[in-house]
Image (cartoon, rainbow, N blue to C red):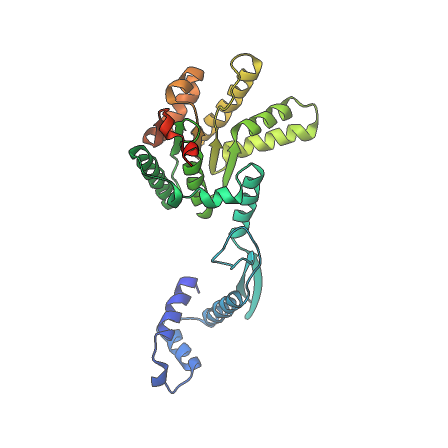
Length: 305
């Protein structure tokens, strides 16, 4: 029996006016069995769903950092299975366990729980037309990405520090994380510096770290690159090395059609000047989802707080 069928039968049963029925609940179940052509295993499934739901409703958890309406902060939920004609119950990790782990990783990267709670669509200021356009575009992007598992477009915000780039990108990122997507946050400069160190290291463990990190950056379902090309060296080997890593990540995600969210102080024209191959790939998959906010003193929201 599927949960959907269980919910339908349960709704039918509990919609009855019980004062009108002299016969027992077991007889009502038997009527449902005949009505829906259910097997004995289906009936065990019905009992299993009901008891597991009761167990989940009774037990409350104490986990902090995220209020989960599914497990009520236990970190797990009770489920059932029918084996050899008997019901067995077991606990399985809730989806919020992945959320909590990602929130903890975000905090290590500098995005605290306070920022996660603050950086939401609902808290993004839209007093100006450019802010409304940014929010509307981001909301549309997030909605489409959640509905379509084959969604492959990119979202990019270019503009000065303080104009809300990280706020709106984090809001999209958290929405997709809660939607069950496999996501990764990349603080550009910190991650690139680590990759460069690991790559040139003679230690096998560091080489493995480099390969593992690059593989994840290239293949994760959703990647949020924060401050893309931040503090890029002007000339020399270090610049070439960073651009090689940038191209490898961008090109792999471009070829595989993987959702990528980018915040950057660089405009389209400036990225074209830095590396046209990187710029054209980003532009092709972002298109109208690339919002460019021109510099202006009144667009630094941090100074206005």
